[in-house]
Image (cartoon, rainbow, N blue to C red; front, side, top):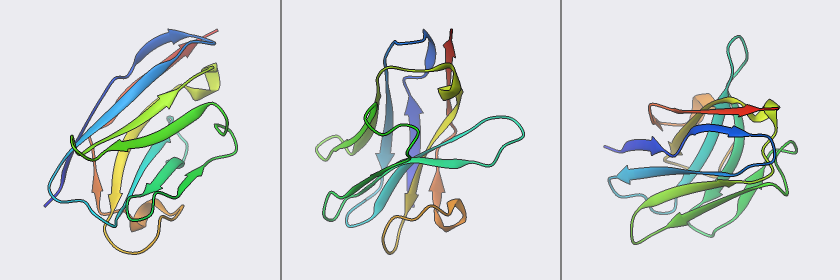
Length: 123
């Protein structure tokens, strides 16, 4: 069983930065950990993913160059460093774990989810 607890969301002005954290309980190794985001009326979309087995990462085109995903293995915590934030980054951000196989875009393939943390970027 894996439990995920996100933190670090908040309100920031455009151009600012936030760092999201996702503390994981349970053994996560050679799995995919990812950040998704969702706004009302829209599908939950993959923002960034990290395959813990080899360290390979993926970023959505809309955040590439601004966001960085990383993991502290000693703390079993996933991070999302978000810089140069834009109003369109406003969303609920969720941490997720996919237990088998490589990271994918399909949210239905992820097995565990956190409760979400709200990010609001004002112009």
